[in-house]
Amino acid sequence: MIPFHTLSERHLVYAYIAVWLFQFGYIAWLVAQWRKSRG
Amino acid sequence: MPKWALAYFGLTLVVLAYGFYAAMVAPKEATMGNLYRVFFYHLPHTILSFVFPYLNCGASFLYLYWRNRNVERAAAADAFALASAEITVLYASIGLATGMLWGRAAWGIWWAWDARMTTYLLLWLLYVSYLLVRRFSATGQTAVISAVLAIFAAIDVPICFMSIRWWRTQHPSAVFGGGDNSGIDPSMVPAVLWNMLAWAMWGAFLIGMRYAIERRRQRQSNAYALGFLGDEPGLGGAAPSEAR
Image 1 (cartoon, each protein chain N blue to C red):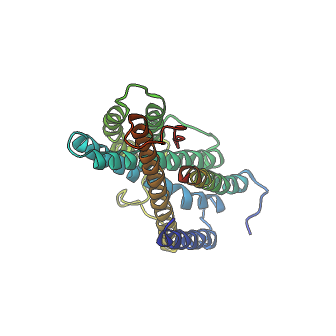
Image 2 (image 1 turned 90 degrees about the vertical axis):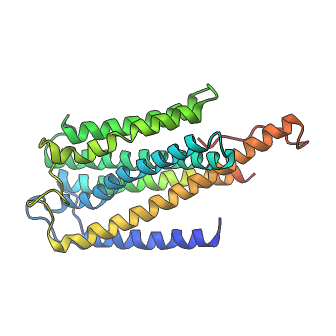
Image 3 (image 1 turned 45 degrees about the vertical axis):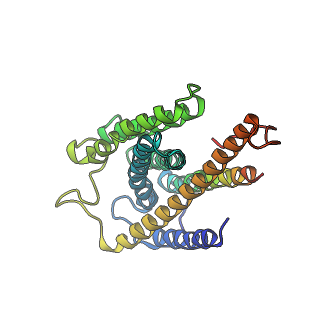
């Protein structure tokens, strides 16, 4: 379990969340485009 | 979407989950503590943002070669160039964001104009400008202009890659292939390799999907144009929506 008390610990969590937000946000946009392009 | 693509995507998610697990159970680093775990996501994204531009560059060369020889192959190469450029921007954006989050915690600063960071920002700007040219150019020669831009942009990749070997500035020296003093503890290597594999598989899936979407859009645009020329009656309706 990673604690969230210090700047280092917070930035570690932010970095992982940022990666998932970028990647899953992009793939969600791709899925929307995929559906749109089918019609 | 084909079943094999869904199976590949499922396998990618499994490898990603294992990569995350490996990153969390790797031993704590002596000086940085848990903060160094940013490295397990930062390194794969940065390395892959040096690989994808070469796919973009290769596809751009093929486009320029085929554009007056084989229109269908040229269109496929152009679609692949666009897909690889977009994923390059995605991975480079993550490389920048994770690097800055790590830098603020480790160095106390978000940014330094050192050799690696400056050349990496240039790389990001080059591929963002590539996408902007593709999106907003109205010359009718967009694919040619962007292909030439892609070839020039790829020149920054080896400079950026070698910058931490040529110039010792703020950014840490190369972890792998950086000489006698480089390398990490063997207990941390599996987490690096699993995450490298996971994000490479993920990137390949994204490129494939983006390529397929762009090919669909090209076919719809062609059908739309043919409809107006009268070759395919009834297709001259609403213009196909653009995915880019």
